[in-house]
Image (cartoon, rainbow, N blue to C red; front, side, top):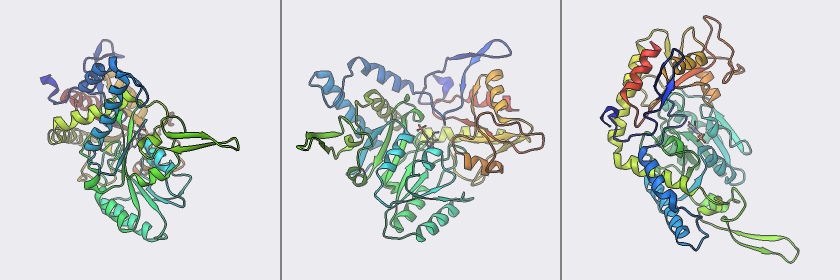
Length: 423
Ligand code: PMP
């Protein structure tokens, strides 16, 4: 489709939505950071496989064997996509949130966790049962590394420690210095998990090259449908941990004891944390998206997205009432996720108007990163936000923000319509 100018068409290009002003318009999906539309190719792959799927790892029938092969091949495809090391495990989960909660349950005893307050709640909150150090928002990537180094140096160097960091912010789109943070973590005997929910859809992520211990991402942000995510990385802590869920599939042998109880031997492979009938179609869709992105070529995808980012940022910069939110400043490398506030406007009303009057879907709120957005807006930490944010009185600070986000398959027209609407 030449009007798309993208090597990767997505679903929903012809969806029309009603306008409050009358008539209808094709929907401009500019909320990729929440959930990206599925690639046409992923949908086609899933549709081709759907008549043949069966239960994996159990059935003796032909379709069960086929599904088991496809499920395990999907694991290998994801491992290749992430550049996994030979002994890394790829666990299929429901989402990034699920992946990070799984890892939180697999931490060794007395593990200390270090996390910046700027993280998405999925990275910020799962560690509450451990001893967590929340690090203040840095204002430069270098400051992030220094802050982490100082915090790690202050701890008992012999105990286990984990750093959790995002690759690309779901609020500002800014890239974090993952390689440098990983080096700092390892130099201080800590491990690091990368929240790649927003990075993986926009950039190649190579676990070995970045030298991170684990990577987590969600299929629905990576142009696959909902319901499947990934935790990939070092096997040792995962193997040593109690299963995330107890049940069939995770257990190798279950026996009744003479005292009446039950003994369980758990699998040591990824199956240990995948109890229950797995989401075969979801895993297959994630693998299909990984293949499609790789085959389309990252250089082209990144170059096209950077052009759209430039266009949106320049367009917004030309509107005096608009303030784009940034932690690291204008020169920071970033992905297609841009948050802003408009002077004199309640962000929720603004986003509602973009939808009702222009057919544009964006998001408003605090984007499940409340401490970060409040830091960026300069509002009181106790201020209520998110849904039902009270109106900011004229001249007062906004209490929430508007986020526009895009990627593969976004036509230029969506971005132009958005800028016209904001103007
Ligand atoms: N981390 C980041 C940076 C995110 O943007 C999101 C989703 N907004 C998540 C984690 C959680 O992803 P999911 O809702 O798919 O679990």
